[in-house]
Length: 122
Length: 227
Image (cartoon, rainbow over all chains, first blue to last red; front, side):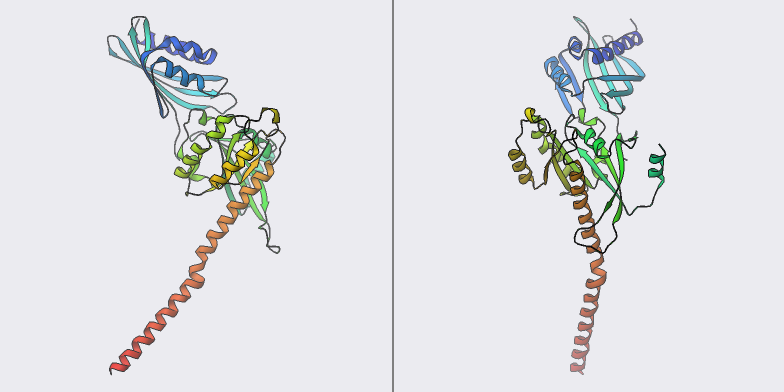
């Protein structure tokens, strides 16, 4: 698979799972995974899943605007996603999410992930 | 529709007051604002900052002043539009608001415990260290699900020096009261500020002139003496 194919397939899988069954994201994280969600940092699968499952919305939809990718090394791909998300009945918010996907022994997993809602101060 | 447009275009008001509703997600901020505006005005959304707000016109009559005309107040009620779910609030929320509703859910212990965090953020980012805040224990209609007693909530409010109201966005209980209480606090503060800025010109300035006059007299006296 090329980096483009990997990132496209991953993005589709990730956001579909996020919307339909958040618990299903567990398989994408390993013990070395690091997630920075806004101001909080979580390390390892357990902490990360705890954080994701504690988010208070019932429903979430993502509308993806762009997916960019780069090979970092032979076993790692950088993926940068921008788009809009809608939680429950809240108005849509823009977001950006960055992933480093790595080939592990059990397949591709998320080594690093950074999430931000895009806001401005003026 | 035309009503909303008229509201927007009508610039005939004395004060534009911005309030911000804060608190954990799910405590009923949006429902509260919806209840207050009777759901009759379309909510507007500022996409860039991510602020959702509703508007309403009210008239404000300062208590204890019978003769004065009621002030026409254009209220903007801001909502954090779900961003608190990710704890991703821009400081613009806090900076531009003149008064705050701090909500917790009477049926949710954690939302009550988080009041402290919200107050810390507020003090750090709002226009001053002691902004006007009304603490609202919402969902008081769900009596059988209540986990925070009124007594405990009042103690907490007292500790932080905040007025406390039990509200229900569902039934409307104390919704208007909370808004008018906050408006009263903010208008009083504005009047005080206006009074202070007027003072130096009326009294302070006069005092200074007098003092200068006294000095001059003394100087001329002493110079007279030296001669």
